[in-house]
Length: 114
Length: 110
Image 1 (cartoon, each protein chain N blue to C red):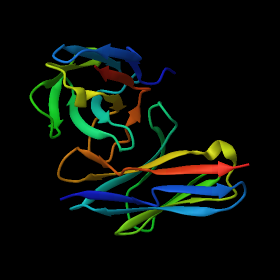
Image 2 (cartoon, chains in turn red, blue):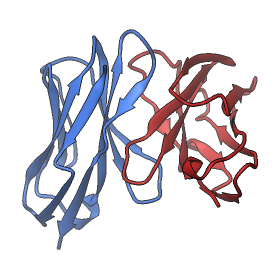
Image 3 (cartoon, rainbow over the protein chains, first blue to last red):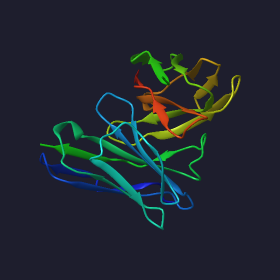
């Protein structure tokens, strides 16, 4: 079975631009979470979605937004990019998104902002 | 505030030299504690979920244990392919956020 997939693999943008990252969860999983991981740190929670509804949001500015589609895939959008947004963006899927549910991660999208 | 602290930050071992990684946590009502392995430039790979103090889980050369304040990841007779960053994360009952530690970078020398 396919695991969590993310696209694109790498992305280079300039300051002020907008970016859209995509994620497809494991088949049968209904919840998707997004994380930002900067070099040398653990992943930091951005959003969780379950059944197209936002279930949780981390401490990120409103420039970050996300949505989940009827097929449970998800997009993360970042507007007005800053140099500090350069990071590995990880998507994780889980069955139902309930507390204690194991999250399985995709390979990530490496975003570089110049 | 919920917090996860992993130690040591980095660890170098000879092949076959067993050791333990520590994950200390403070959280109001632990719902689950997770261990992941992460190779450079890749997404974290799930290893274990622990739910209650006293619980233990094993997989090949790895064994994870949980107390009310910390978790240990024991590595027995490690091989060079066990070299990676090991991440610990916790989730509280009150919300669905998962909080990660900074990880322990493990390097096994042949």
